[in-house]
Image 1 (spheres, rainbow, N blue to C red):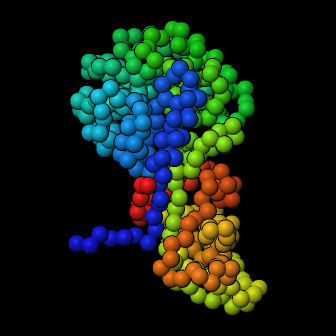
Image 2: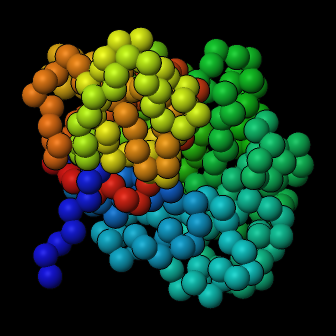
Image 3: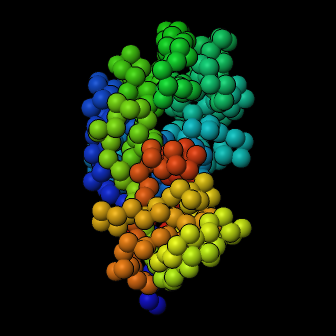
Length: 348
């Protein structure tokens, strides 16, 4: 059977992915540099990301749950670690006890469940101020985890992308817990945390966003390369006459004649309505603006300046992550992880 070719695709730059990890690794100093590949590798494909980063030298990977772990565990090379950030539920225990992946134990009940089952090496999350998952730093964490063999004791920074006092506060709390709890390694920094400096890096860093081309802090902007480039195919070229409206609710009315390309892309693909009237496509040196609202499967783009654009052509979506986040009101994380399953994902 002839393979289906989708009318929209993600061009994924494997060289840029590796370059980003190597820069983050260098910035991690003496700490090992891991990789968060949860949410299917931030939407790029966890297996493909993991395979490329293992070849580059990455030895620590992080997923959110055991379903994600099952999909990538068969790819693990010798000496590579896989941690499951959401810990271990009762429903996960059969798989977890047989797996090479380690749970990141987050609650007293998870700790008891793992200890009572005679589980092996685990990781532990301590909450130092984000108030999501983790054992409370104010409690007796050492007593709570007594008897566990801890591979990595970790916490997570809430506001590392901002210059706020909470960063130093969380670090100080983590240092206090580190002094009381024995573990093979200690880990605090995400992508933005790596950029905060050596004091935040400890033994292992856990970048996510920056691996995939996101800019966690301004200081990373000259070093992180874009990895993801969405493209969509022109389904129709048409003329919009002065006075005509286009799209749902007629939010754009033409003041002059326009040449318009209708592209196979919409909010069902993760290109959300926040781009309505703000998004654009790129063609060589031209930036061609989006007209009207983003609909479920379609967008309309002004191609008046490009008479060469025709039905069947591929156009590149303007998706530089910081700028696209500012235009759409979405975070860089949402822009990446929301890219839908209907894209063909093509690694270069």
